[in-house]
Image (cartoon, rainbow, N blue to C red; front, side, top):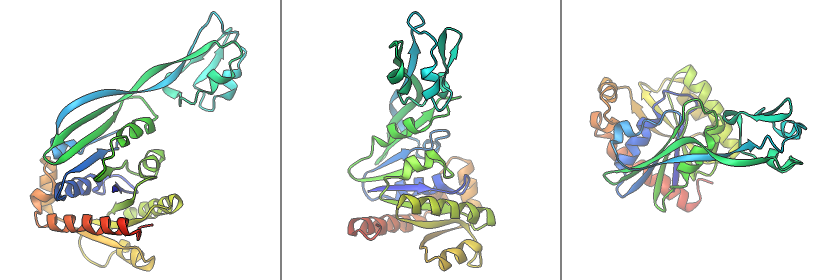
Length: 282
């Protein structure tokens, strides 16, 4: 089962929930941190890193001795990653999306490709949690190849995927093939606004989902009312807690502050797994 934890905005507690679920699993579980611009699951799981490797993508290299500056490569590039400069083409690797179009159209065969590192893939172990994270290099704008490299480590058992916040390409790339998605939100107007956008995204992707409300204080809130009106299941309400906030600031998991939630997280995993196996989540 591939269970993605997502949110319409940052700061709702997505990683808090992801870590809580991983630590509550009754058997071995794989934790994939696909928030590659700022992976922080390791701060709470404290894995022992066993391997680290580069994630690279092909980028064009121009042979100036063969290039005539015709501009065909620049015309096909939709990201302005290659332009003609006088008698030859010039490449901007940080803008390249590795489509290979410039290589294909070059009439002089003056363009080849070489691998360009854009991030790191780190993996390790934390108890019965197999931890894998992607880390995007500073200044690189294309996160999806690093996310895809992380997702190559999906296990045959339960895989918990910590998604990037928001509903950009990074989030879509992360959740598009998930068996189930948990949307973590907060009971505020801002939380509801971004939750609605995330829900529309998942409906377009045809992914089954439910909601978790973090920092919950009472039943009289806009998120609960919206979910009730739209017949969207709220599977868990995590109470507002100063103890939880203090534990988070020390790099401790939610369960260290509220250990009673472990049974609820474990039960939540079982319920979702049964729904996925029975096809009810489709």
